[in-house]
Length: 244
Image (cartoon, rainbow, N blue to C red; front, side, top):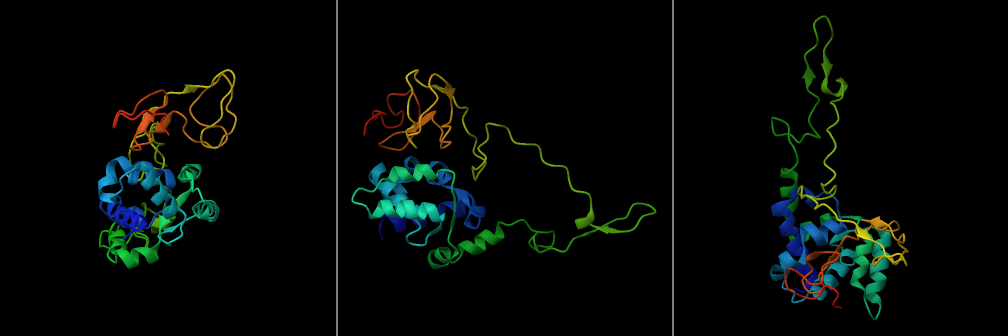
């Protein structure tokens, strides 16, 4: 078993135990490497010695080359081309941070036959145990002097209030996003470290106007921990934040 297969199997186990709905629902690439399977929390289970090994395995997994994940065509093309080059660039996965992927049903059947059953069990059910999507509409008692109606013709329920702006819209387990502290772009101008686009000189910003990446954080090159933009050293392993 190589690094990619080991990563996939551990991913399935992790999702099954923490967020079983994601066995059949898509999730964002950023959620995969930052929330679901971050290196700093899973490196022992993954059996990977360095963050570089982790990123290379993640690059191949997200390329869809082995059919473990269902991925976007453009992401498959870009990451696949990088893997075939003489110097693969795992940082490319961050260009697809908002792209959605999902576990391949064929892969689940091959490596964890019980996973799909677990996913079905996680679906909401009617009071008699029938999946809500398949349940017949329940009759609704008619108002006095009126005729009976069904749930499908009843007035729609009021919309749920929007979540707080600090909640991550794509976090699979309701994880809360930390408040961002904006960075100030130098008056002479700077380039986005992700897409190399020109940032607005002298402005305070949180996200790149070109690719939408969060510029207020960076990741430790050794352990992958999330660091504040102006930190010089990693608070987890002590590595210099700017080290290559």
